[in-house]
Length: 258
Image (tube, rainbow, N blue to C red; front, side, top):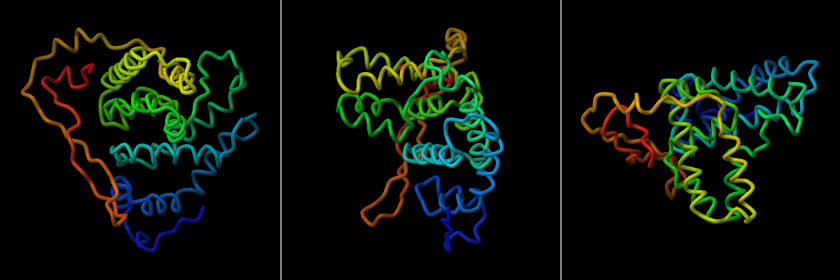
């Protein structure tokens, strides 16, 4: 993959990640150019002599799609993006190398599209895509990471929250998604199977944190939190729009069920 960028050739990695976070695909391409071969070698080593169902190149491509989806959601990239990218690719390589990776009855294995594919499939039915996009940005983000196989610890690191908060956030995202889905009798539509698959893939085996304990936390003054949202202007340049993400009336209810 040759995506060298003269613009960012001498830039620091910190600068490149910041620019990629606001939608500069040339910056993301420079990151790929700097690390692709090394990451490819690492992933191939994980797949060595294993009956993998996917190539190292495909695994890296899928991780990049997830990064683009994360940027498009307006949440940018973490400062340790490269390290997280490598760990995510290695984890996926180990998963597809398991002997039961193709077993149809494997409880932990869920066949599902990647984030970019989800948007394409949902576009076939207006209501289904409206339900998913109607979720809070953080709910969309945590579902994307969950579908990619990320653990609560992975999600916590990527989103800059505690593991307990990531756990609560995930379960509330699932609850919101299911509540919206159940309120519309569209299970027989072409996108119905996809929505059910999405819900099943997001069902985690871990127990949710007791929300009663979180609710008992001392209330704090309301805080308006904003999230940077990357978008392209008419000239094709990426800009950042600070928009309200959610209101936090108290620390324990920052991610309250809508």
